[in-house]
Length: 277
Length: 211
View 1 (tube, each protein chain N blue to C red):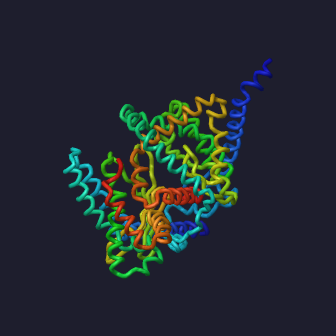
View 2 (cartoon, rainbow over the protein chains, first blue to last red):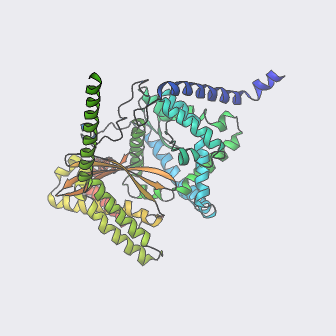
View 3 (cartoon, rainbow over the protein chains, first blue to last red):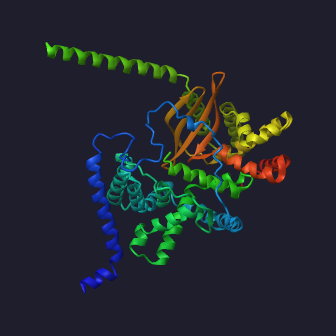
């Protein structure tokens, strides 16, 4: 009976616990081994050779490559799905102006900024397990243990993640890693561009990443109902929009071809994240 | 005896170390005096002061505030350089008249993108993280703290007659110039330079943004 119960109902919770325990164990082991004097930059990424970057913080001289062909990196992202992508770009654009923005405007009128920030923190905290796993997969034990510490601190003292206690008090900063970046770390290219309905700009690799990361999201790990998942996602989205009202409009209204501008911005943004700039 | 020598040695090492630290520190503060970061910080502080002084949200005051900010902005950016690099090799195909006209339109476009945020100014803070200098070029890494979130903004500057002017900026790793370069290039390829000019003119004539 007990076994049955475990298998059926709690297998997801069990999974989550095992992953978390493993994670904590591995990161602790590594942390104690590798973390002694390392204080600034140059993390324990000697594990797997780092992908360039990671230059010392106080470095005042510049590497030449940063100046060379400053805007010439024309590895244009392939876009075989352009007609469909453009269709969904317009779909998302209309969705923004007709639904998301009006809702977010009303929402922002009701909820004070501090509460919106707390809600953003809450959702961000739920993405911590995925970040911790991906930091670890990229051999960055330091970042990974930081994420674990953040998750533990913010979920408890930070009250289910509403406050970013770990950053405010201990200056533990999030690493913003995800599976797409991990795949890139091991040499995967971006593949073609995909503009998803609702989800927005992505590419083949990052879409796979998004899918994989979702399995490390507590809501999905805990096997929540579909309606709960969609509800949570919507609240997250509305809350985020409320906090950044005006940014999307400004960017797209000062681009000649907003679709291409967003596509390029996505590519540049991801490239920066992958190189950990 | 042996011990004395060791002591002497360590004393010298310590002395040398302190000396180098002192000189390094002195050099740092000297070069930083009117370095790119100080100049940038000065200008940004000026803009923040203007924005903080603005109390009411009357249209006249907003317009006046925008003009004041624009005056500062015009002194910070090298718009000609930016316009030129946003066109890439297409720039050389233009007559100097066309170039001037393009610089004018491009300037308005950039102003529109960055001045548009003024209305929503709400005590955001700027943190200057570090600067890196090579010859007459510099990168300054900053964070703008908006609603408790750090948004990285990197400025690229070039020195011209003692003044450091911005020629590109990256917001969350997205370079403004690289982004416009793609944008412009695809238009020029399809509709030539005339088509580009027409499109930009249309954009900046549009009443502000659809806020």
